Length: 202
Image (cartoon, rainbow, N blue to C red):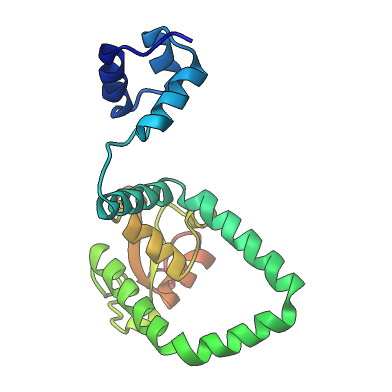
């Protein structure tokens, strides 16, 4: 096997700190894939990553994970729901016991968390007030898809608090036709082809 020259090792270090794949590095250095991979391992250089302190490496990994989850939210949610249904089906007693412990320990915390999520979403889509009838009771307010495509969007983003979480994660997109309505006005529009019952009666 041909010896590695100092100039080649310096070039290898430079390539290793970039996002160039190993095969491309091997082609540029006129070396075999195995030879380049072994030398990188010996030099303790990680591809696509500058050597960092453990804290910096952990922060970079967390940032990468957050970005990946944001890009693959719909796929990840489908997988998680599928796995959860399978686990509950195979472990019914454990699922019941976990539900009991969960409700007793975390119910109050998650109730406040979901309320905060809802308030944040309502504030970004017109404020906590129904645009049709003026209802201001938070318990009655919802986010409506004015384009009547809510079913298709829920398949992608989820429903309930999961939908609110999706909106927050994606920086409150403004091209979805979302608006704040109370339950009565939303159901009225559903039963009257997009026209609220208030308007039909009037």
